[in-house]
Length: 400
Image (cartoon, rainbow, N blue to C red; front, side):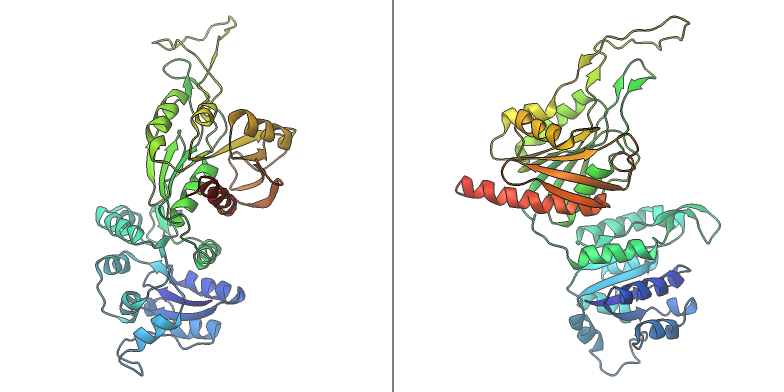
């Protein structure tokens, strides 16, 4: 793929040299475009040596008055790393005063932005408004990391690792908008069932799989409603987030948003039991043993299965043994179109709290599909590949 690598003027520009090297190793043709400020941090010769191509810098030191148009037309993907606060403001508002910003306005392919700046600049309302504009425009955003920054402050704003940016470029290179027009309802995370005002029952779910599914669906053009229990994750860009705490609250929100959904994915790890009568005051610790009488929480997946009409229903099964048998039992008993099963607990470092997963897709018709270990984001895209096949079959069966 022919990739344009825009380099903004920030201390993180040195990482862009490593990104250029990674993209070359992956077989891409890389054309670097630098802002004048970027040249103050890294010399163009560094990028020329890495890519074997002359670096484009000055808009007025070019062979043709329309060279930025030709360059835009010749390349397939534009990535800007680092995308400074100044650059993001210019892109959001269509300002074009150098080669990179002028090129951006002439470019019609996918765009990936990797912001990097001071934490206060990143969190400023103006930057966040510009970011929202760029997300709405359909650009991919590689979120900055948190940590010690060059300015001496600590917090979000550090340029993502080159490997992370390269992976986002690979996704963008193969990005499909095959969910446009679909409304996807996804549940994620755990629920918390209170025992008193300070204690609750919950589980180890981090919500990472559900959030990866929401991000993947949004990237493929879907309108996404993400109903999430308590997690420590930023909401994916372009997704409507509905925060809940208990199983009862999750059920209420699922049923409220169900009429608009064509695809429902129940990735949440909903607590199975709750205390029906929660004390108003904290229960004091004593030497005596305490027994709790717990009642089942509402079975949201089973209720969805009973209501199932035209929407496609996908459930999740986290098991510690007999994975495929238990996942198929769940598919049949809950009336799902597909169940995603994964092993958790024991010595496994996958599933709960991990950034990676290894799953099996249990289908109502056809052979089960095993997906080998991969990032949850990659697994999410493979799940949607199969969901779309099921959706097409469902439309065909309904004659639509």
